[in-house]
Length: 181
Image (tube, rainbow, N blue to C red; front, side, top):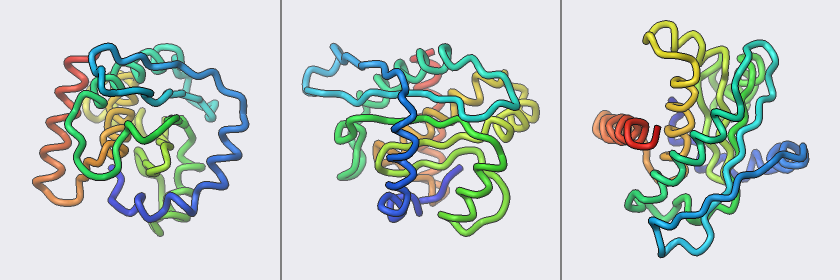
């Protein structure tokens, strides 16, 4: 999954954020009745920018809304958290596009599964998700849901740089997936 470098990369990717945000997406408003302290919760939008693998975006959008609610109920981990975001964008992209982002922002070659940027963007490689789903015996939609949760947890201040952090994050991901979906 993504490393902790994304915090320092937020400023660098702001231009592409503006470009992607101008694509005219439909947004889902989140209403957190279970979290009365939350005045305005973020909107989450899932957008498919790749064409190679069919994806049920409507199903992912619905599950993204549910897991966002669950993530917002978690105790804030660091000064950054989801409650400070107005919008969260989940971009489903190809391995080719992910490889470019991975090289540009992390200096690593080849695609990765998910990259999260602290200003509220989560990039997911659908091709990589499909490969991982086969290896782990998951349906593709479940793998994509896992990556959405992973990205949201990063936006809420979770890290996976150390084995202890990775273990905590993984158990939190699984708990959210079980309870929200």
